Length: 458
Image (cartoon, helix red, strand yellow):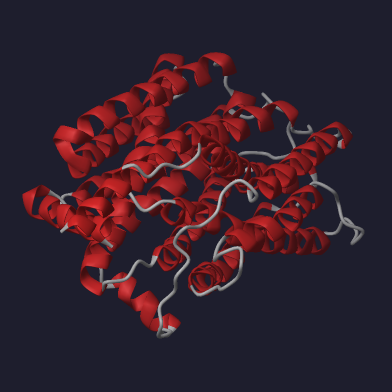
């Protein structure tokens, strides 16, 4: 009995150093920012509008890439869960992958000596995307699950997640603000743009690499008996709550990608000042963080997430139809801010519950596999978002050869539709799906309490 009391006392006092949390969140932030700059519309814009790759070929690149991601992410999740090294399961991938991750990012913005034909540009875009994302998978997945291995107590993990919210806002905001400002226009020299991207790549490498010397894994054990990867994946899909979570997770990644891509085109063709638009977006995000973090204690994750989907859907639908009006567009930006806040706070809470539920069924912690399977589903959302925006805007007559501000009124409306209509529809589907989410109520709360007691006494 005394031993149990001591175990609980030690667990309650568990802390993670502030320096460890800051370095982890900084590395995660810059890793995500690089990915946002490249996959959030930057690569598509650079190859189609600046280098001249056809929209159809660019769309094909994203579709092929989506197929690769079906194998890439769950495979790495499985491998990382079973990695054995003196540095742990995750740190080796972060430390030694940082250089190549940054290198492939920098090489994206330099035309390779393959020529300027459509075929050469297609090969460069496809190869760059494959190489970059493979390293992103290794590093980002490892960073994603690090909080679960750095600490055991929910309190210590929660402190890391709260800090990550602010760094995530920064990683999302940098691509949104930076790329429209520094992007090269048709006919301009790309040198200034390339130098900026080089500097960003170098800084990212240094921060990610150095961060690995300031945190370590406390939980590095792996299962005694290897489980077939296909059975591991199948086990995830037997978890009904995971399937509903993935509907939300896919939608969040799709919307984040298409909004980041669309905003590049939006500021080219519409007269809303960027500072005002992002200011409204920021206010919505701050309001959302406060609202969801307070109300989740009384309303629960399920009800808060459902409400977030409805609010975001209404704002997106209004912008898709009436977004030429700056007031309506402002409402859309505010709703998007609230949605982003929900995506950063509520969805991770759902993810934690899904993993906890899996442990109550299987008796195992499988963070890496769940992260990998999640990426299997959400990474194609990036490809579909890029492809959908290109094809819809083209259908409305968008002309990539025109300078900023010269598109037709129909093409401008097409930008709004490509930007917001699909997100609105997907959010409605999410709201419906949340009505069937099973992890809520007193029965689930009791299971959570039992699981917490189990970890306290281990």
